Amino acid sequence: MHKIRFKRLKFLHSVKIRIFLIVFIVGLVPGAITRYAIVKNYEQRAVELRIYNVQTQLKILANHLIAYRYLQDTSSDVIDAELRMLSNLYDGRVLIINNNLKVVRDTYGISEGKTIISEEVIRCLKGENTSNYDSQNGYIEMTIPIMETLETEDMGKGASESNRANGVMLTSISTDYISATMEILNRKAIVVETVAALFVFIISMLASYVIIRPFEKITDALSSVKEGYTNDPISVTDCIETERIGDAFNQVLSRMKVMDDSRQEFVSNVSHELKTPITSIKVLADSLRGQEDVPVELYREFMEDIAQEIDREDKIINDLLALIKMDRTSSDLNISTVDVNVLVELIMKRLRPIAVKKKVELVYESIRPVSAEVDEVKITLVITNLIENAIKYNKEYGWVKVTLDADHQFFTVEVADSGIGIPEESIEHIYERFYRVDKSHSREIDGTGLGLAITRSAILMHRGSIKVVSTEGEGTTFTVKIPLTYITI
Image (cartoon, rainbow, N blue to C red; front, side, top):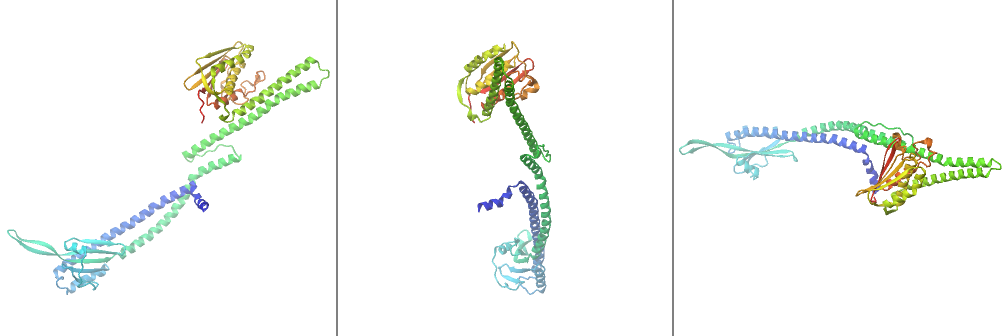
């Protein structure tokens, strides 16, 4: 049952439907309110005008009643004619009540001689006009006092006049014509509303289509990218919001292209790097196999070359495996408290023979003792790669300076060298896998082109950062910043 209801209401989740409903409702509600206000205002004004006209007629008739002394003698044909005319004119009933609350005349002829006691009649005998509109039953009831002027004699002041209610005219008149006019107004208003509703319906459909159309373009573009049909950027300038979404989509698409190109280049580089040592090994092996009575010295030389190529292949595979591990989540980190000063000293000691061989001076400066929560193996790999690169890409009789410092949050390892430097256009690519700054000498300088990619991944796993400043021909400085305390997110 709930599933059926959900399916019925699911269409309301559509933004297009919501926009249509909002515009449609906003377009209809003011019309309905306006129609109600106009009809009600007409009713109020018609009732007020009706009361005013009848009261005017009743006041004139009240004066005639006093002049003909109708309350004392109801035999006047003139008054009877006026009462019948008034009753017929307004489709109502008129009762003449004396000051004893007795009905002396009823145009319907059914209440004469009866006594009427009501709040309105009593208030009217005190000189107050009353009126009441009963919209349910369709009539207006009103009372008019029959005022008689009396002359009184005040001692020392002479004669004066005073008014006294000598009776009451209780009148009920029909409002059928008002109701009929209201029905006509309602019918006409409904016709107008129907036409307006049709117009608003069309406007709502157009508005929802126009507003949603840019989003449909974006949806179609996303579907095309998902299916792999297109990688073209989109332009949705219909409104600011869709333009921003389009820009964000294009940025994501551009990033996807870069990642795809990087993936293809990575696969190509891996294939090339793995194939090169194997090709060399095959060439060397074929050369040995194609010769008879190979001298021992040549055989030993070829075998040494084959061993070097095997070592190179092994290094590439190990670096690839290390990089794959770096791409995993930080849960693979083996965090422990490490004395970074001792760690850097050990790395420097291990790399010093390489520096001596390359005629490069190693300098180590420790500003203060540093203890941090890190993965010792991965941080060792980071510092080793940076120092080893600084040695390999240095000049003869150059130098490499390693500086260790810390503040209350981070420790910093700075590796500066006097080497060949990095061209400005290559700095943003140095962390890419298999990227070589000088491809012409890539075979001469030992390495796989994965060292900095591995280094950066290990630093990011520790939520640290790495920056490089380099001047071609003068040297390079790498600065690594790692939190002292590892925080799990």
